[in-house]
Amino acid sequence: MSTARDLFLIVMDAKPEHGVGQGDLSLALAGAELIDLIGGGAVTVDGDRIVPGWPPTPDDRLLGEAAARLTREPPYELIEDWLWRRGRDLSAAYQAALEEEGELTRKRSGRLSFGSERVEPVDTPSHRRAADRWQDKEPALTGLASAVGIDGGGPEGEPGGNDEAVTTVLAAVHDAVMELEAVRQRRTIENAAFANIWRAP
Image 1 (cartoon, one colour):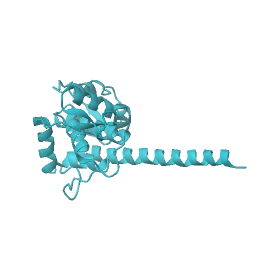
Image 2 (cartoon, rainbow, N blue to C red):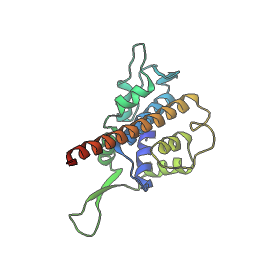
Image 3 (spheres, one colour):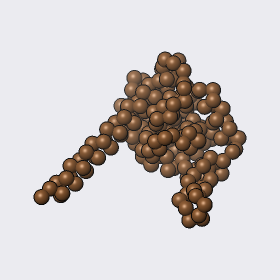
Image 4 (tube, rainbow, N blue to C red):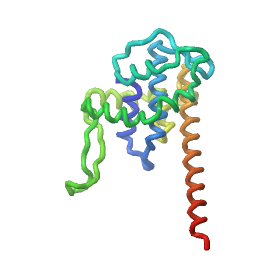
């Protein structure tokens, strides 16, 4: 299992008071993929740019797709640009993959058979491994979860531990999620103003 898959399962387990938005989660998943590509030696980080190394052959299909989409010509891609480009609809892709692999199951809420469906993790070795990483407060996983509003009680100090590249990615994920929230708030204000124009006598 990859960090992105582990993150998705942890988010499903956490059931935060305020639900995690798909856009926020997609940005964090793109960051998780990048962290795994760094860990596997497929890329390095030079300042705020992603420098690809040898083309990797990850066992994970979605991580392989991420590696295949790296920009391999200079000037290399900014981390922030990667998060937005790769993150588009990424949470839906991970949900579909995890359902297909039997890591997630759909259940109906309420007693009636036509109640709304919700998705829940299945108790599998992969799910238990993700839970173990979460219990151990693994810096990358807790840092990514924190970006989408889930407090894992990670270690004090740098969110990525001693790994400067991971810390840089986590900071970019946090910034991107905050930017997305600012866009949402701006749209809410604009929509409210537009509605008021139509209500005006």
